[in-house]
Picture 1 (cartoon, rainbow, N blue to C red):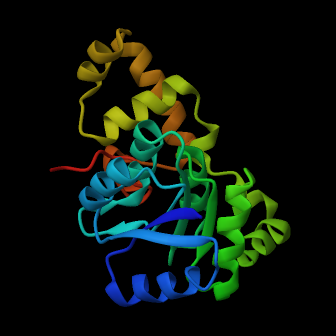
Picture 2: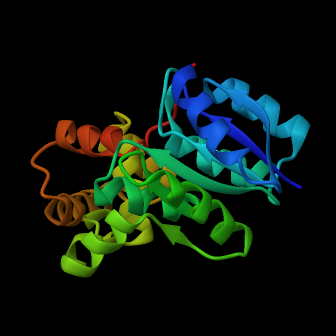
Length: 211
């Protein structure tokens, strides 16, 4: 029997997913959670085989939660179930450690197919996402993926409101170097100001969840 924790803030949605999953004789929903805090507690206690996770939660984006769960429950695999079907969300979820991504607009049977594929150690995308990637392969190239490791660090600090002088101090580099990285990353991201950087980071759930 494979154990699954459902994380979605809508009770009706959770109930629908639960009924669908438990039609399978070897799949069992062992906990239902409506927010990130409940999910962390349940997964720490239950150590499920799988987590089916929505990205839009009352206490913040599910994207940082993916990364956290991968660090505290290394044996648990994660499948995202989301209304968000944009490529930036998909790419970021996979980058952070999700093994599958199923949109809520996909056929119900794709959820079970995704859970089974992920249990086999495969990566799974629902058919609508696979079709889009096949038709528009350039969409998979998220501008953030083109940043160097150092540019990514500078980007996140600037987006979080740090001044260039503070960024230089935190990273142990010269302030002039920060400005060079800033110019390069803003060009790659199509940003014109730090406000744009904040918006981009916020939309992708890259900023820490505030308590």
